[in-house]
Image (tube, rainbow, N blue to C red; front, top):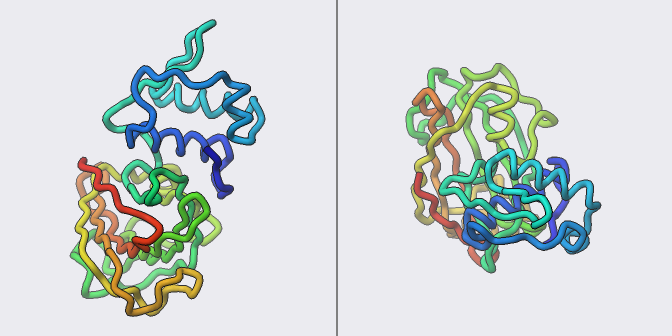
Length: 234
């Protein structure tokens, strides 16, 4: 199990990979993890980094560390992962998601978006998504403009939900996904692979904040030769 580098600290990247494995059932409740030195060697990281990862999982209630025995998975029905609500995986399963910001700006909300939020404007964030380093999807996210006046590209990390929570005090509590087919938009970068106009699986996501208000609407087009979308009921 190897992780690809992103802007999250390495111990969090690995924690997120393990959380996704727990959520997908690849690691089951009560399963004993390999000895720490063996696990660190398999991941290509220092033992100290792995121990930070395991401490993070323990804090989230996903790991029980038994003195003299080892580390055991404690699976939950809703793992507290910053990626848990977006389940785009490699066709073979799993893979750490990372994101490259293509463009960030504040604009009037387009008419074709479902009505949401209190502002007439929104922050449009376009991203290229990778899974385990493989280009898999493009996204256009609209965050309601009432939460913050401006968003700088350098403020954003691999997880928008983590940015929302730590910088804006916004918690995404529920998401509704609508899956259909859609044409790749004109702004898609050449590196994505499928050309503009190509028909691909498309996900419209409507995300609700902890106060019940609709905070965000997003479009995702994903390359089904690379990735699959796993529905996650909330």
